[in-house]
Amino acid sequence: MSPKHSNKSDVHPVIKLLYDKTFRSIMYQVLVFGGVFLLGWYLVSNTMANLERQNIATGFGFLEREAAFGISESLIHYTPESNYGRALLVGITNTLKVSATGVILATILGTFIGIMTVSKNWLLRFIGLGYIETFRNIPILLQLIFWYAVINRGLPGVRDALSPLPNVFLSNRGLYLPVMADHPAWSWVGIGFIVGIIGAFLLRKWSLKRLEATGQIFPHLSVGIAVIFAVPFLVWLLFGAPTAMNAPSLQGFNMRGGIRMTPEFTALLLGLTLYTTTYIAEVVRSGILSVSRGQTEAATSLGLRYSWVMRLIILPQALRVIIPPMTNQYLNLTKNSSLAVAIGYPDLVSISNTTMNQTGQAVEAVAIFMTVYLSISLSISYFMNWYNKRMALVER
Image 1 (spheres, helix red, strand yellow):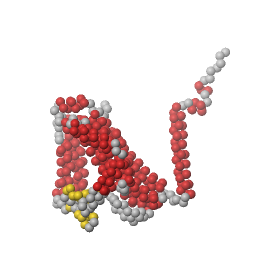
Image 2 (tube, helix red, strand yellow):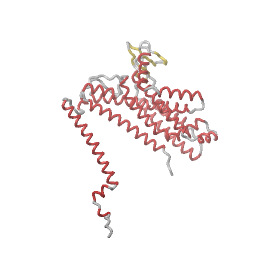
Image 3 (cartoon, helix red, strand yellow):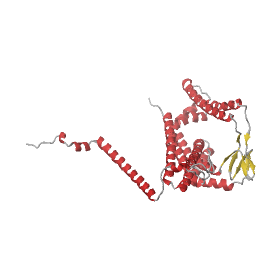
Image 4 (cartoon, one colour):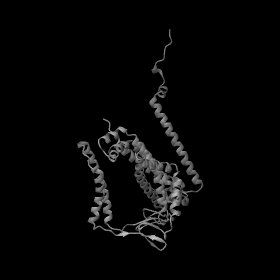
């Protein structure tokens, strides 16, 4: 008689479970998660034990203590009598200020440089490619130090400040610019400017729908720009058209009045913008080249001007290629702003270093600015991913 073959039902349930793919995948994930948790618990407990052995207090209670150090540049009110929490908030706002300004300027300049590199004009193409190859191949830290040295040592003192325009002064202490004197009208003018931007955006959506429905072109760009400036202008007129200026002037050994862009902020903004622009320009160039040449030829055969072809046909299609790598450049610019400590700009890292040196709360200070940079980066990524989905092609 032939030996009896074992039935599958005779397999032990445990062995049968081990061969189940779903169970094994879950088990592997649990083991990995457990290993990461144990490693984190070991690191935290070891750190806490070392701090306790050295009699170093832990926690974030130090944020309520008086900071007792000055900060040269601040968007919010701060004095040495303020607490460490206020000081760190100053660092966060300074980081956001230079990062947001750098992102806007780098995007505008990078787009123009990217378009120049694909221009039919050899001179524009040469200038664009030369700019990219020059600034991209110099480390950003060296660029920051270079611009700071140029501003701090290459410019004259305050008494001999350059005045390229009326009431505008440039010296080794920074750039002094006139501003409008305090008046209730300017808050409403700012609101009017925002309303104008919203109106221009709605006008653009309407004109594109009209173009798809009727084929008629509406000059939404020029009209939109007019709306953006017309609304705040009308608000300004309604408030009596105030023109009083708060202009800088030399008083004693320093300038008084107006606003000042410090050498540290100017050097950091220049370095971040010029360096990041090179990568954004390459992203824009690759996006434009990804659009089929037949699109340009077809549009040209219809008699459209090159500016219309670029703005209405090429760039909208190129955006789907441009946006994902553009997000990386925005993140890089924001994280590179931490190099501000090299030239003395009081950003989050610089103020955190001062805080940890005075309080000894190194772990907490590092955890704070790591969390802040992580939050900023995730916010940028979320917004750009949302915008990328809005620009994606809708499949039928």
